Image (cartoon, rainbow, N blue to C red):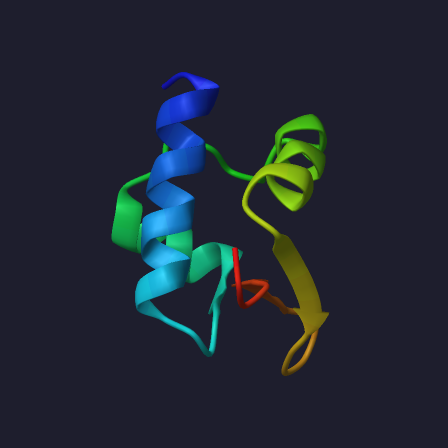
Length: 69
């Protein structure tokens, strides 16, 4: 999977779920082949689609996109 495919899939999924999703939920829903998100790609998502990661329940972080992006 190339970065552009990853970015587009994550962006679509998060726009459909305004309350956000955890990495595990994204991984399962999108059938992502990665055990953990790539830190470099994650930083690019912050700039390109407005990705935010906020503390959720337990150790999980909830991935969301900033409104207006």
